[in-house]
Image (cartoon, rainbow, N blue to C red):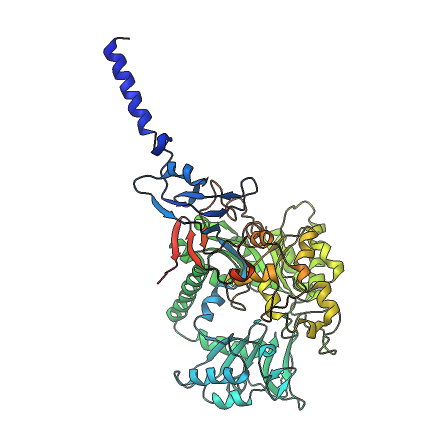
Amino acid sequence: MKLKSLIQFVFVNLILIISLQGCGGKEMKDSADLVLINGVIATMDDSSPSAEAIAIKGNKILFVGSTEDAEMYIGDSTEVIDLKGKFVMPGFIESHAHFLGLGKSKQILDLREARNWDEVIAIVARACESVRPGDWILGRGWHQEKFDPAPYPNVHGYPVHNELSKASPNNPVMLSHASGHAIFVNERAMKLAGVSKATVDPDGGTIVRDSTGTPIGVFEENAENIVGKFYEEYFNGRKPEEIRQDYIDQIRLASEESLRKGITSFHDAGETFELIDLIKEQADSNKLQIRLNIMIGDTYDKMKEKIAGYRLIGYANNFLTVRSIKQYIDGALGSRGAWMIEPYSDLPTHSGSNVTSIEMLKKISALAVANGFQMRIHAIGDLGNREVLSIYEEVFNKNSDKKDLRWSIEHAQHLSANDIPRFAKLGVTAAMQAIHCTSDATFVPERIGEARAEEGAYVWKKLIESGAVICNGTDAPVEDINPIPCFYSSVTRRLADRNAFYPGQKMSRMEALRSYTVNGAYASFEENIKGSLKTGMLADVVVLSNDLLTCPEDEILNTKVLYTIVAGKILFQHNNN
């Protein structure tokens, strides 16, 4: 080779080498869009559980590792955030809540902080001042067991409608119980519905009455429909564009609230086909901000007709999945609707309610397995859970060629000791809400007695040790969508008075973190794309002010969400001002 050609060859290669190197002589990698450095990262990846930095390109994670190595992904247009030691984890996966219900809760009266019945009445009275006569007033969040003082007069702890009716003579009022399994209505609403002493309790529902047989205003479980259908007529009587906009507003409000709380994925516990269509339209227009895994909640006849055309997996860049069916076998413990093997300790004549017949649940389960759908049945009482497990077992045995179905029981709150091992044996996921434990603990022993409470109330540790998978959530709007108090409940089981509710059933911090990340992804067959932070996974990340794995217990509740990142985009950032 001639000297001139040799010099040109060396020069060209030198330039190439320099162009492939970055700071400190390191080789430049593919330039990232966003790089987080100097963090304390819980990757939830067993092969590499901790890291300092994450590089993101587009909607995927490009790199997870040290801050020094992350510099290789920083280009001229890369946004770099120095986390200064803040805690980073996969975005929270809310594994059981009601998406549009959460949005609707932002449009109606919030009664969760009402300390007694008088405060509820005052809130309703103020609302009556700003609406037209005849307009419905809605609210949610009251709980008779949390009123201090207790309502007087009362029936089974429930207040009587008289004072509420006096405060709202011109407007029908419908206030949902915190659990969503009972409503309280005023006299105007009962008159619209034609409710009287002669009104018969429906199957799977109870009209609560005083000693004379007069309805007091409380309608439990399926009895809610007696009044609720008249509100639905009112709601649906508006112009179609008004109804549509109402739902779109609910989607927006639910998304904003979820992002503020660090939630990037949301298992929506039941929507009708009509509302799924609307949400799909939003997905088609790239208007969904968090990832939704929607359970179909509609009638058997409609599902039989439509379900084959509604199976969606990873639709709209993994923002919408529809592959499960939501049903109910019983109600809630607070309203004594949970279906129990033995009667309630504080109401020995009652054992709860079976709100959907076993025969119907078997038919729907057969429809699900034939069409490749998961079943996700609400069961709270020990008998409700036992019956659902038996339904699942029968379906699995009849379809032994179909593996890894990952059906779940939603709530699984109160279990017989004999049924705890059946979850792992059958491969049934327990979709539980740890915050319900500490929220309900004050009345659980009263409802079912100490022995049953200790045996099977929110027995996370027993389930985990048996090999079952638990995914976590809040059941919002029953509870605040915020994962932080729920995580705190998971690892402390501590009540406001600092006492712990059967502390032997606490989760470890890592178990609790898994329940809100990888286990939530597993429950929806998405563990290969979300729930952990590693190369190639979806870039759904949350940055917190405290390290949930190591901070003092009392500091957990002070944890703030600093950044919520979905598909590589910062959709929420905490304002320090």
